[in-house]
Length: 65
Image (cartoon, rainbow, N blue to C red; front, side):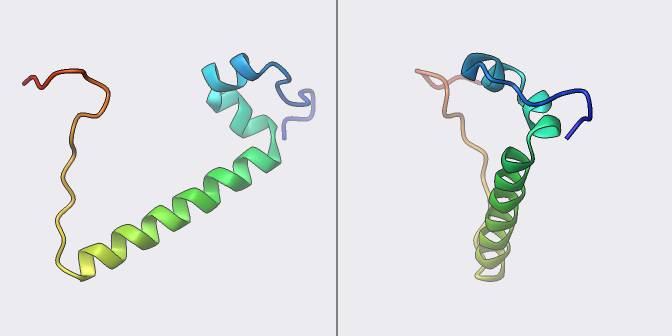
């Protein structure tokens, strides 16, 4: 963590400024590292099985392009 910073206390600030939360909170950083490792392993396994990763819009209420 940053020496002059002891983490964000406000949940809203933590979610709005994830980059600050990551550099100031070791536990949050460890969770993000673990998630990245799991996602990488899943992605690698599916690629080995011949699957193709396709990005799809998930936040829009209607299809667009």
